Length: 147
Ligand SMILES: [Zn+2]
Image 1 (cartoon, rainbow, N blue to C red):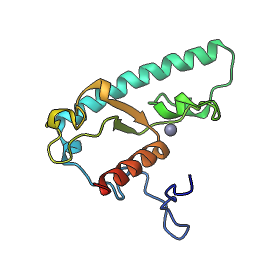
Image 2: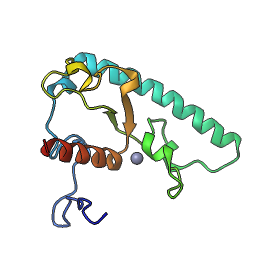
Image 3: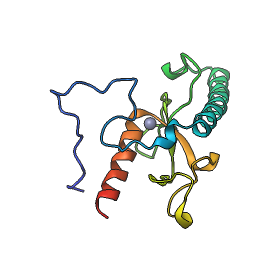
Image 4: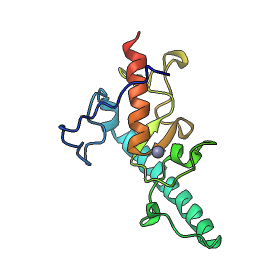
């Protein structure tokens, strides 16, 4: 595919601040500042940390060295965990709880008959690393700009 979008980061631009994962081209949705989302996210984080603990115990049981992502217990990127036949699966720290199916940017609770995803459903969220989140939101940006 010759028309893949090029990375937007330019060498002369300063790297993105670590404490601003949502900054950039993505339009901020005020839903992400609300208590229901913050509580939901905190609960999902606890579950993800528990899953990381189980993965860590399996690695230890297998006598393998612990990857750096286990220096502290934290959510792991769902996409990095998948791997592909060509890309080995990786253990990467995830800071973004991403909606698998994007939520309504105007009213998160209005799914418009299924056109948008559920905002507070455990089935519609996944933890992503910064790289996979940037790839996904970049793809969503292109998708929306073409309509
Ligand atoms: Zn990832």
